[in-house]
Length: 153
Image (cartoon, rainbow, N blue to C red; front, side):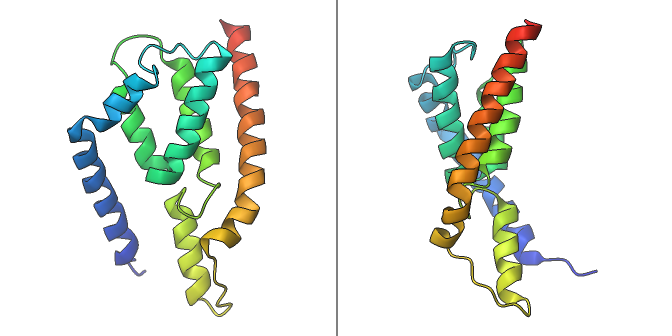
């Protein structure tokens, strides 16, 4: 078995960078500016703000780091079932929007390039396939979760 040091260093660097960013307070200021600190995610407006924030953020920071950033903004007490369900679902699907949305996408692109297929994924090629499927699946799934949460609450 071979250790892929490039991937290991990528993750390490990503989390060091993420901790540094979080320590600046900028993620918290954005969270508050979008009024997500007081959002219950039970109304469509706050849910759509959270959806857009999560979709875009997952493709700027990648889905796992964004999840960690968001969870740092959530107080340790209270009912956060809605937030956790939406966050887990949207970040997972949002990771398919662009090549940078998930480290798994980068690994696949790297392996495809170095394999015998030598297929090159670039940002725009990936986006052609990822954009429509991600938007459709994430919106449908988000509203299914919204409906299910309304039933159980």
